[in-house]
Length: 91
View 1 (cartoon, one colour):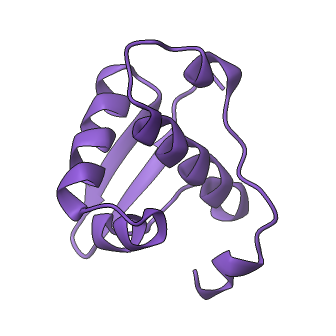
View 2 (view 1 turned 180 degrees about the vertical axis):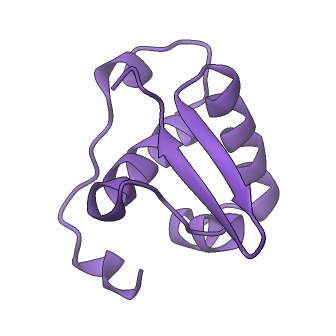
View 3 (view 1 turned 90 degrees about the vertical axis):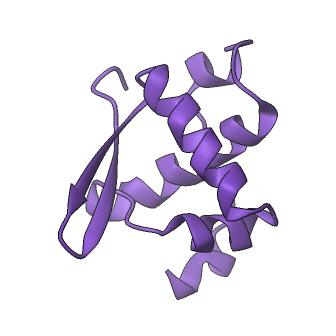
């Protein structure tokens, strides 16, 4: 996670980019999640960490994740000490 500053870009699925029902912040978050899942197949960053990266509040990240889940763009699994965010099977 510390090497995020070395990333050159984030990848955003076109279906998400064109979705008029979600906010621009949710779209940027989806791009970040998509990029972070490329290494391990899932994203384990906390809402606080994602908020710090995007310069938004933890609450904003929570809202965006809820929005992305409702649209079935991501799937979230909660384990005892870790949350994993997966891309939906549509990608």
